[in-house]
Structures are given as C-alpha cells and as structure tokens.
Image (cartoon, rainbow, N blue to C red):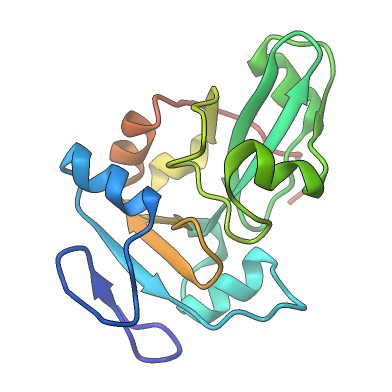
Length: 176
C-alpha cells in the first residue's frame, strides 16, 4: 500500500525519516504486526477525510480518537470512523454516566501526551477506558493515528481492541 507520497512503511522496515512512536512501540511489545504510513499534513485541515484522501483509503476505515469526560466516569476514549460524530448520549450510556462532553483541545496534550490531529488510542500518558465503534470489526485493517500528525498505523482492529483493552459499541450519531 502506498500513500500520496508513494511511501508505505512496514513495522520492521528501517526508514531514516520515520521514527517509531510510543504507539508503535506498544504494538511491538505486544507482538502485533502493523504498518506505519506517513501522509502529508495540512495544518489548516486536520480532518479525517483529509487523512483518508492522503492515504487513498475509505474514510470508514480511518478512525479518529476522541477523549471525553463525564462527572461520574471521569476521562475515557472513543475511537470512531472518520466520517461520523460521536453521540454524546450513547457515549455517556456506554461509559456509565448521565452526561459527558468532549474535552477542550487545550486539555488534550497535558492529559494524553498527544496533540489534536495526532491523538492515538495507544500509548497515552495514562490508560483510560476505551471504546471503539463497532464498525471497526467489519474490516481486516483500520487506520488510527500513530501519535503524531502525519503518521497513521494500519492494524487489525481486533488486535488493536485487544491491546487497548477496549470494548466495542454503537457510539455515533444515527445520521451519517
């Protein structure tokens, strides 16, 4: 597989330009195979549809990582397809809370160690309860951020769900 710059990097290939991220090292430690795929970052468009276009992949396979907070449940992570929006009521229900909200962008780096557009469900500063949208299981491979802007991980969603100790659920709004 190649991205728009013609590059495809497999986990065990040594490339001088690409350094492994915490997320990739976590997969290495778990013995999970994956691909690191660089793409061109547009600082004015960090949306998942741009990433999918750069990768030449179906937007439904490119997942975004969102961090939410509830009064009772605290912080948790939702990983949803790039063409969807998290449904806060569904997320609250699955997390065991009455009301939850997305955290402010300014909270993301101190809480997770990641910035907007580079947040991975792997390798955060602390492990948070994690929920993947159930559609991830429809694919043999999905893409999530590798922990920096401009780099995605292609990985078997079942293995990713297992290593993040995640649960699958319907997390998105009905209108897609």
